[in-house]
Length: 392
Image 1: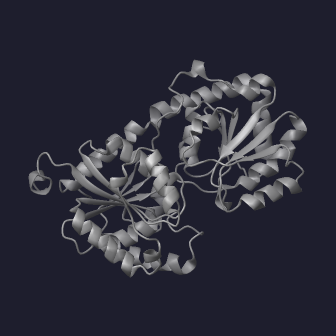
Image 2: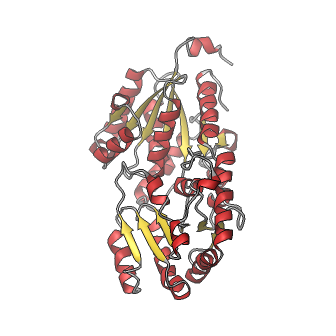
Image 3: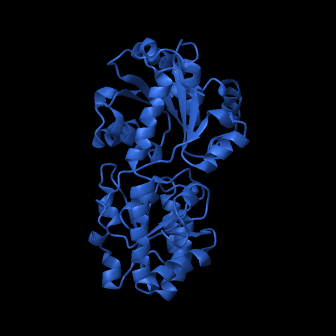
């Protein structure tokens, strides 16, 4: 191993460029914000590099989370369309910033940052994988291009972090990364409630009108239509129940139309959520949290809901199974089956003490197994290992 003093001079922080090219705000944006707020200035010097269609919204979201605008670089989204100008711009930023590590999120960032860093001596690329490696939402020409570039770069990447064991297995089985370079690092969050189960309140349970809510980007892969299809079945058994969908996205009009088609538009409330909103205020209005997503890495919003003591019903899928112990600190269900989804909601509505106990156990699990300090301590170690010549 190289002498650390030759690579990172004593007293100098590890310089890391975080690269994120995803167009939509979501879990990755929140994750990057968490990394900045917990590691910046703690032996690490972070620069956030973005390229997004939603540049203003993303900038506002980051600043609202405490990110210093001087630590953010936004590359115009149009350069990404032609790849070569974007790669050249990234390379120029990497050289000028004298970075030790490039930390890239999402497959597009992996391949583009990998190409930009390839010719820079000593610069190492760390990949973070939070979702399906080649998502079906990406056009097939891009999927093919990313697969080909990844084939040539996969051994160049110093390490790949997967947020769940399921994603790690996908990377290895698909030949996207060699097993020796893959590490599972579960996402962590800052619990929202303060940690006192005795302070939890459930306004709908108390008033006899339970509120079942979800908080999500309104897009097809989030499965919100499943949530709506379960609503009339629940209403038939628990007449006072109400449903809330909080979020925004391209599927909003279709979902509203579905609620109207099923005759539950007056019982399913749609709420927009400003980027700067305190989501604790949202979760406090829910008694039960529903998470019907079709595919996830490790869902931040589910962890956040559990950290507020909300008994949660979630899709029985990879990633989510690593969060919920079925029947103990949450409920796993095939949300594609409206009857099964509805029955899980009805059961919690009819057994309020049991639902509250489940919510408290979920809160305790987040505090012990998914606390942000656990994740950030390991990530800080990884930065140090890589900067000092360590790798796999």
